[in-house]
Length: 299
Image (tube, rainbow, N blue to C red; front, side, top):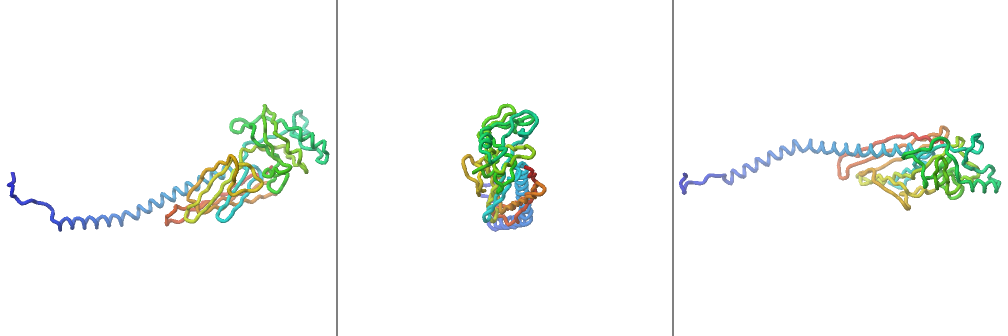
């Protein structure tokens, strides 16, 4: 047992201050040697996330663009905002023509657009038989779908699926029974000149799709996918209307470049997609990825 009046032992103020100073020096050294690698790791992780986000967005766009209705791709821009729009195909098939040797209900076009009686008879015929097996599963043709025949694209009325203000090449399906498809009306009857498919082909649409890019300096923009909106003759930026569905495909967008070239002599087109991303507030440089998509424009 220590005597009650024995001197107490402990740290002096000078010793405590020295310990604090030494600890601060060691902490500063650790920060200098460890902070750099940590910042480098964080920057590398951010760039990896941006690269994955940009690659996923470009792959999604490329996959859907390859399913675009022939000659339906169009691009518009306003300032830093740009958009690519197309009509997404669900499936397709062939129809009987009036001169086919096999008996079947054919898709009716007027034989003589100047003959009022012939035009009226064609307009009254709103059903046709599909050649071969009907698509099933996710490609099943159902009421409410639209069919398009021989689409040549904007400015090529009546072979323009976007513009149905007059004669049109797009019709809404009202019923499907077996191989027989019934239309709500027959807009093909009003065509003059008649634009029937040389190969008796038709395509079935699922929805119009727009990829709307609103880029901003520093990575404050977004890439948004729009679908299920009404088809319009004019390309709206962004699209509007009843049923519109929108989802963000990529954040941290600095800019987008969408390009489309249509090689009419070869019935093919080339779409160029460039996406630039940057983490907001980061001193690290922006990341740019590009991809080209070949599309078949045979109507």
